[in-house]
Length: 338
Image 1 (tube, one colour):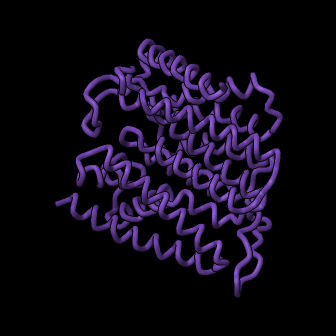
Image 2 (tube, helix red, strand yellow):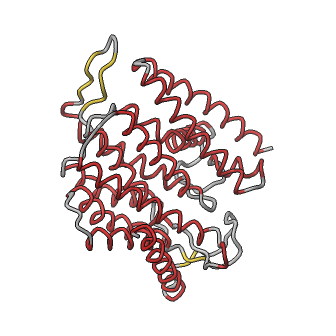
Image 3 (cartoon, helix red, strand yellow):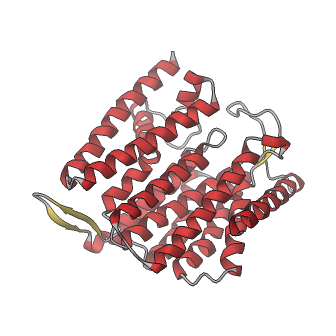
């Protein structure tokens, strides 16, 4: 019954934010690098967050991490909305994101060790814990924001990452009633995002909605601390990184390529992976299928190698796969420039 109610409430929420988006001018205006031709509300992320916050405040959730995540994610939503409306300088946006991220870290969600490896031993971060965690969260939050360029892309990638995380939890053997609440919360969030994709794709004549920066930043922020939450329960930190391979690979490789070609790091462009593959396939459906499948395959590879207890090897494998990904993406970049 809760899932049916979730669908109904989400439909109502998305209709509401679509109307409010148009009324208050919170719409994406067609420009040179835009794929759409009409004004589209970018309040989809607000609708998703509104439902999850409403559920958090009206249910019997007792997990303080979930409550903190939903409260402080509202700051991220507001930062994203303002960025959509006024287009902030990237440095300003990163500076503002710093505050909700640091608050969550100080509330106990931090990365203090990187695992135990052969020839290296136990890698404790010690005094660098807070700096390292802050940088990781800023990178992943912005990496998810980077990936928002075609319909459904961030939504499907986010869901694939969460499904991998839930698979990792299942194979880890962790048993915790506290985690059960969080897993149920994640399932509701994935359902809310799936309902949103029907609006995002304009299916069944539903009003078209974009996530907007508010939505992609919210999902990046939420995913960052979901990873840390699960890590705190005892799962190897480097295994968790495999669930977000495409987000990280694309973000880092795109910026390296921009540095090589002396382009500004934060300028909007068509050099992201989804844009490059879309140019090859000319299909949003196939582009999403290819990239989401890659993310799932990377995650499964990571889990298999990890279960074989090759912990040191799978770090080098992750780096090797990134090198292969970077080489492939560099060729895509060269070909799209021809």
